[in-house]
Length: 469
Picture 1 (cartoon, rainbow, N blue to C red):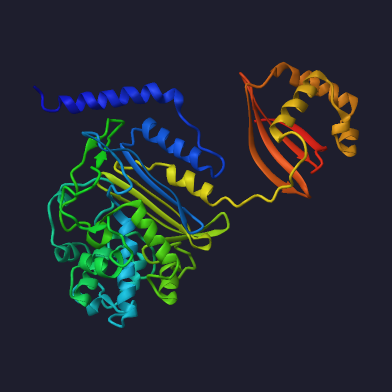
Picture 2: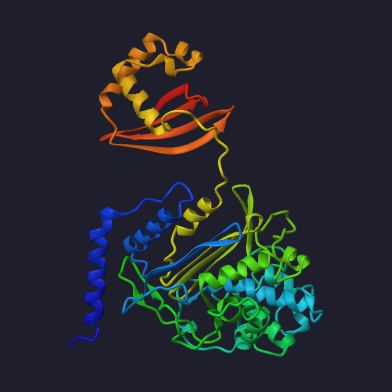
């Protein structure tokens, strides 16, 4: 019997089920609705064959969602649990930077130290600082620029040999003059931590960060297979997910060598935002983006991207190593976070970009309106316009004056042909001038219309405009 046949049959069954469920796909919610978000994530795992997914959402300093979806492996029916470990790839970089900053707080090094103090034989070692490495402004070429494990990375390598090969030759640009993501610099930072602390980077992280914060499901550079861990998968040209072989020993280290869970990463996020890990000056340095000599803001601090979204600062990083993707974003001003891991190359897809805006939604200050809900009012008024009739007592005086008999007759002629909407969806609700302002989508068999409606708190309609989608 073909030893791969059971796996092939299982994959075929899963794909068939995904096709069966396609008609039941769940839409992305428009508000921060946790049950709706959970249903959407479950649907996305099924529809996109994402294998396994683990998600934690922190809102206002409290974990409000911690859940696994899908499977740890396609060859194992074990579901993803909140304790299931995933490789977090470059999310590891913030831990490496924190280790450097902790040693700086101890007075054992300075982020202004040049590479020459630790590795004098590397290219331009006297002109490149540890902070340059943390900021990705060193000019050292990236040894891992592709999205697959090539032949050289399938073999183990000693970190110092890696540094000689990739930090001992030609630079990509003059130190400090530009920004280019470089894993090479983080291998070097990890080695500096080891030289100064006198212990392996993993031991330092365990003693100073993982242990004190109770990150019991987080491990550095574990042996494979990793206990309590999901298995990594990949796809190519729309193929079914297939198991992946991880990078050889020595290729990840301080650049991406950590396995963790979203729950543990949420503990880290809260501790970092609440000042339990770094002193204020160190945290400020970590979360301040580098500005280049030409005035460009790189939107990158030390192991984290730093940018404004929806008017608030977001501190984030994604991660990708063979068979795994991860995302970790913090919103310090609200003590909120979104953490996601997946055991499929590129498996998170658009999910982080879809969910983070929901988490960051601000409570709308909108007047409470007496009477029917906005959607019901829209349906009733639209039906009236189609018939050429309107309850003028429900209209504010100026809109009633605006809605002349000629305008009403024309609206009836143009709108009557659409018939009754098959679906009515409230898209937005906001305030302007003390009024409730709503946008509602009306879906018909062959068309889609939008209604912009303004209502007084007492319920009278100040404006009702209909346009094509």
